[in-house]
Amino acid sequence: MGNRTYLTIRTAPEQQEVLFEGNNSLAYFWLLLLKRKDIEQVRPAFLALYAAGETEETEEGPEDTYVDTDIRIPLAEALSNAAAHRPYIEQVYPSLLPLYDDWRSYLATVPSHDQVLYIDLEEFSGFYANVNLFMEELLDFYEHVSANKAYFKPAISDTTGWEAIGRKQFYAYSGHYRNTPEIVDYQERSQPVKPLSAGYKILIGCWLVFCLAMLGAGLYSVGYFRSVWLRALMALLILTPLLLLAIGGLVWLINKGTKTK
Image (spheres, rainbow, N blue to C red):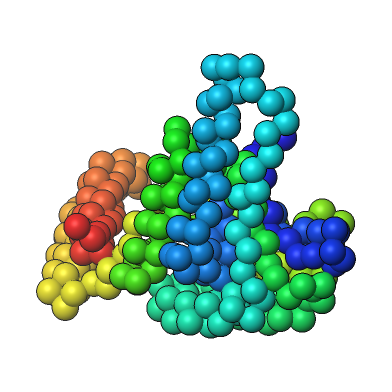
């Protein structure tokens, strides 16, 4: 079992239904439903939660200490915040924009008893040594949003979260959700590739001309040998190193020309 996070609605006064969930991950699309003030408002609740946990570890406190840390956001306000954050997705994660738009549209159609979304991040906070570190992590996300900087991976685990077990509504609603990878390896670091400059293209062209000339000279020299077997042997000895040199030099030039610093 992992540390779960939940995006829920109320279907009745005392009944909640999970729409999306995370497992050992934080769905950053959920934070785009909020503003910094919404995170700050739950800081006292999380402080109380951590304090209660420390009390139970050091003293004989109440066995069942309940602290409500759910972030509550009116659905209309959440959708307004999501719309305001759309330019961030459009600029920084353009490939995720169709998924983001589908998700926003879907949330607008979900029937809710009180027209409020509830975001439960309590279990995920357990990954942090103290509540301040957790809060700063959440608030740091909004710093990246305001600066149009990438922060999360383009995967279900880091965007919408997984649709809750037993639900298939959003799965049927959004083909973009179905085609989004569930997770992306956090060890994977793809390097951006820059286009070849005109200078490198000229250099590669010169290298190809030089290599063709060398291969031509090699073929010409092989013709001096009368024996077929001797020609084959000399072709192997002369042409093989030239081919390896030509291919190796071409690969090196291309890698050098497209590598980013």
